[in-house]
Length: 394
Ligand code: ADP
Ligand code: MG
Image 1 (cartoon, rainbow, N blue to C red):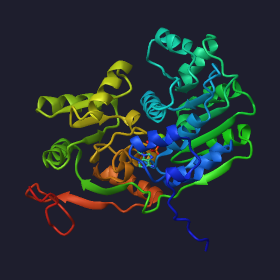
Image 2 (image 1 turned 90 degrees about the vertical axis):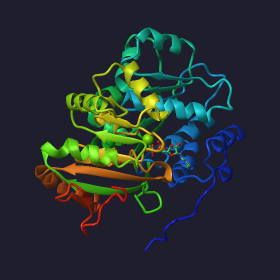
Image 3 (image 1 turned 180 degrees about the horizontal axis):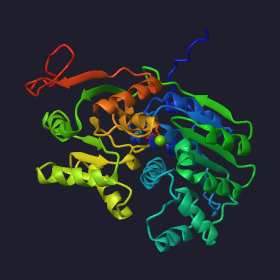
Image 4 (image 1 turned 45 degrees about the horizontal axis):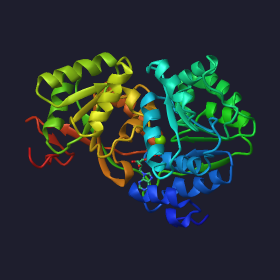
């Protein structure tokens, strides 16, 4: 059996500039996560990479640090490009890059995504950013209008690659890759992989190195998963029971449709809960505002469709509640991955009607997990299998 590499590597042991080390220190990190320890040196060597690592394991810094080490402040062209599937994720990546770049004056990072006025983005592009974080559709739009050229790109990152390609961006992503120089470095980061990722790798990467970080005890987010047997007509009441437990200060509730997200949000607000929602039909400015207030802890409960499930990093989400079971199996993992981030502990509850529980069995096979079953007893108290109450204070 191959010996497991369990060494931890400190950022200070890597060949990094003092500006980056200062920024990393300021962000409060000292040890690299496994995906960082493995991909950082490869990326600094200029290798093409496919990195698959569980959510919450620090993939953004894994590609962000090498990007900032290699930015040439004298070159006014766009040199580095990150593509991400959603607006929220793009903004979040930009924020993290800006934090890393805090001590490197002169680095300009622009974020280009659909939903924001084109004119505002043109202004940002005219400042000659060296780094662009973008969603594929809008970037292509700018390329076609002649607002942006990619012939100076030396590093290109596809974050949440499989998701992006899943969302029907294959053509757009392909066009964008083809607008960059053929010798550019292309790296893909994701929690899971799929056929489209492999196709892109095969077509556009040069002898890529595959880095696969399994979900081990050490790097797996600490998420305890629970299922709750329920009936459709009792879901709302059971949701309130969890919210009323007063155990969780920051909660995310996932719902399958925009309509239901909105209705549930209104209902909770009317009942006096601090809740807000996030879904794809909202204006971008409104979405940003909600994310910002939630991050700052201005309200307790965020209701969201799967738009918010991937990649979004909010510290201290203590509990994720699946009000509905996601329609696609993979989303279960992405949803619950919103908690237990950065080695904190989190819990995930999934409310299951009978028909959902049948579907959930398939998901469990896929993720190889064993959630703890809970149910409400005749007195309406949530209990463990043993009959003991789940929350001590109720
Ligand atoms: P992923 O993309 O793998 O889902 P993120 O890049 O969003 O993960 O990082 C998850 C969280 O971990 C973020 O809050 C990030 O700031 C934090 N983080 C990143 N690198 C480290 C590290 N070396 N040590 C501790 N926390 C880290
Ligand atoms: Mg990520």
